[in-house]
Length: 138
Image (cartoon, rainbow, N blue to C red):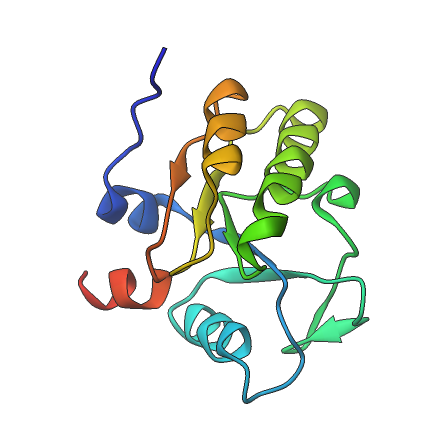
């Protein structure tokens, strides 16, 4: 069964909370700049990175598995080879919290395995799209 993913504008209009996996505390990094843009656009971000206690003034969590808050989008800033693991963590989060966040992989940050795992877990999956670019289209 192929899951129908809502249209990107609908996802972005309805989302309130975005977990940013791999969010860097270094301002020159793309993940940092995009998360800052998301904050400025009114989204609440949750940094997901075990290397930081806080990013952009928000406490960081080490992994999605440890997250108990409602999340609408899981925005992935990890190398492609790590995306399957992120989807596994998102699936564990979804089961624990009875939520179905959209998995959103940035440009060149995806893998066929991750996409298959997301489909099997009934998690919407957007691949190789920059969330900031898509937000700019609204």
